[in-house]
Length: 98
Image (cartoon, rainbow, N blue to C red; front, top):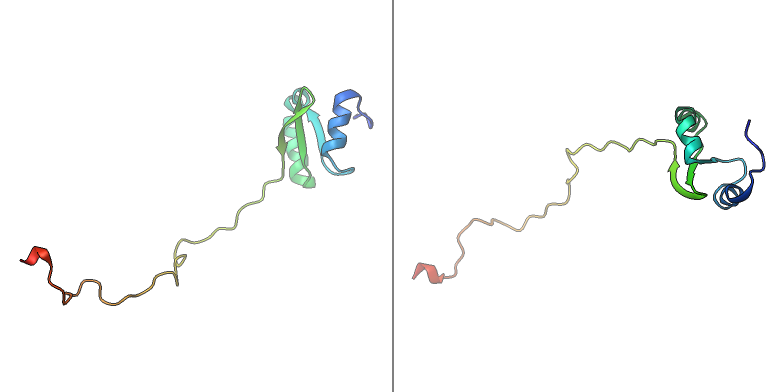
């Protein structure tokens, strides 16, 4: 069972990083032993876990949010402008024609 008031550096890190009742701060060694359990908790409870090493935060485990899928078809619609016939001959004489 977790100690409600951690001692030393971990307590300072937890107070600085987490909002009471949200998320959890664990050491790297503790994360290594409970990795799958913590991942399940993050997924189910939608909370965050901060992993510390020597009392300093090094990583944050957050719930995965899938990005909205955007179809590439039609993504550039309305971005092309028309400036007339670009391959039609011009009325100017070119030096290469001489």
